[in-house]
Image (cartoon, rainbow, N blue to C red; front, side, top):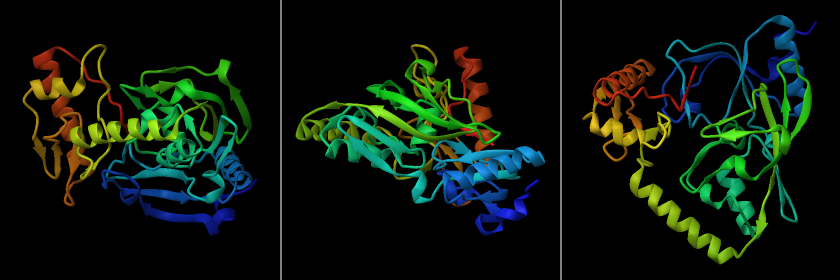
Length: 292
């Protein structure tokens, strides 16, 4: 039986995760492991399964809050080049799950393909975007997916094809431990026209979201037919502060943090928002961000 000691050259102990999250708060990972290949990833995952060590995957941290006490067990970070390759064949784009969504969009558009440009301005890796079906009013990432290669918590790999996948509002049927890669089926389009649409969407997002601040994107999912941000604003919470965490005055569904913020500040502010919206609007807000 292998042990984590066998992977000492790719492992950091008690490594702070704050710098890997967009909120810049949170404690350390007991073990931060950065595999260099899919085979090495599988070996680490099998080791965790055999030894009973908890294991989870960190993307770009753009939609994540890590508690101040940190995370026990292994946190996998798929930052090596092997997990971020992007290849285009005709109208099919194959992407490693560690690739940034922004890079995939720019590659596909430069290749004369359309279908992903509506996601411009949405941060994160492809794997994280896929698992939570990231998107906006103009569409979501799942609508162009042809297949996904995944890895189970026992290290087994297999491909889930289009008819084995389902995507809903900020959710997907992908529940395996790791997304390894995804294939998108896109369409040919005019590069100049696509770039114009992208610029318009980018300007709109930049004008309405606090992109210059530390944040984790939208904190809450939109209840059916209602904007979560408008509910938070109706509850009088724009600019509400707890320690170094504050409800954005630009978009009330964003929490921004200062250098002094802690994860406890963010958690307390989240609970304050949920309680106030429930009391005043009779709506229970559901989290869109992940909390470790």
